Image 1 (cartoon, rainbow, N blue to C red):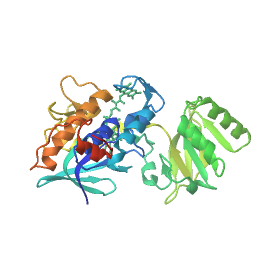
Image 2: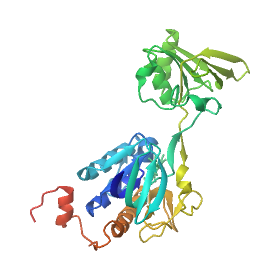
Image 3: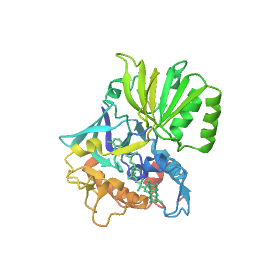
Length: 340
Ligand SMILES: Cc1cc2nc3c(=O)[nH]c(=O)nc-3n(C[C@H](O)[C@H](O)[C@H](O)COP(=O)(O)OP(=O)(O)OC[C@H]3O[C@@H](n4cnc5c(N)ncnc54)[C@H](O)[C@@H]3O)c2cc1C
């Protein structure tokens, strides 16, 4: 059981800046995110796109903003628990017990939900038999590419992930790239490279096909794919990879008794607390009159929610308002030296 003052759910820009606000007022926190990297929508959906409305920063990309936010919270040495989805939240005496899908448990006096539009989940195959092979021979992301060495791999999808992995795995595996359209959405240079690999018989490209069934008992033996014209083809296969992009799921947050309003969590604007005492919601996931779904609003909400958590973590202390420019305590927490 990991004991902390505040558990932050979501490592998007809002969750990250909130870590800073918790840190400067002396509260400890842990952060959980379902993605394999820090940065939420900024890193997952638009890492290279410029943002023009972050106060004081005329222009910066989603990736640059994320890196700056990570840099800003370095002094607090915060633990990030990535690839973990918060599943269960329950109250015990004066604290909350939070469980993830990997059975990790946290004990915290407050929870800040900075879950954006919900957790990002891969869009999956709709064929029923796929579920039973998921995580063993069917994957939607790759953790260890070595397992595919000298095997037959069927890759589905037409975007950059499908194309990049088809190119990379073709070095050591037999690759079949299957896409439901004739045109690929990925980078033109990758499409050219794949055409070259196809001529060299290193990759087999099958377009206008979709998966219809997976055959095999304990292990996958083959798949059947159907062409737009109705023809069915059976292909020997050891592994199946699906790269169809991400969908956002509110998922377990639905079950935390937070009187949701159209997939958003209503909060007060004094400290962004929800209807559950000690649970706060900030960023894209919260709603109140006048809410603007912008990063700058999430920063403000995080600053107030952090202060709202103080009374639960330190019930016998009073939080004093201090500026970062002049507060010795804040300088100590940030590890900055000041001759004042
Ligand atoms: C293309 C595009 C361009 C944009 N441009 C701008 C712009 O110019 N300016 C601007 O201000 N805003 C812009 N936005 C909006 C901005 O990105 C969002 O307002 C911002 O990302 C919200 O931050 P957040 O931290 O609240 O949520 P998110 O960035 O969505 O992060 C939430 C995180 O929580 C995680 N999560 C959710 N549920 C769970 C769970 N149960 N367990 C574990 N983890 C969970 C998710 O995996 C995710 O990483 C843009 C958005 C898009 C898509």
